Length: 91
Image 1 (cartoon, rainbow, N blue to C red):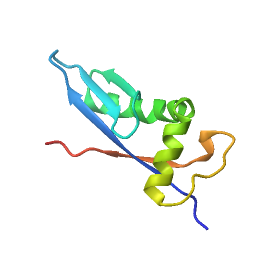
Image 2: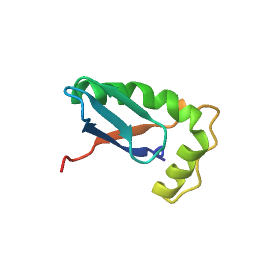
Image 3: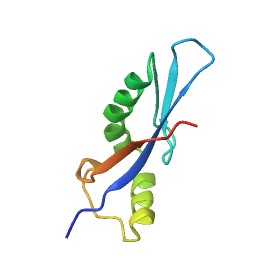
Image 4: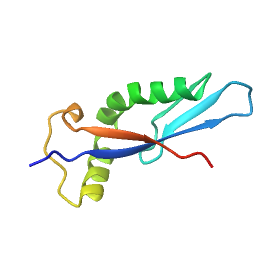
């Protein structure tokens, strides 16, 4: 049986300041970062999301159950739950 995979969307947007971008995970509140380029912000999102999923455990497990239409797995640590971050398409 394959593991449930949490599907997330990374969104990166320019700010009003030159060369400053903000990025966040669309599906889970509070996972946000900023940087000097889109690439830097996406890299930061990749790095911090794993840590933040532990902090946002209940929200992440509820989202996983909603996405997979299966009960969320019983895990000791969120690091046991695989996730993927897709880059949001730019408008």
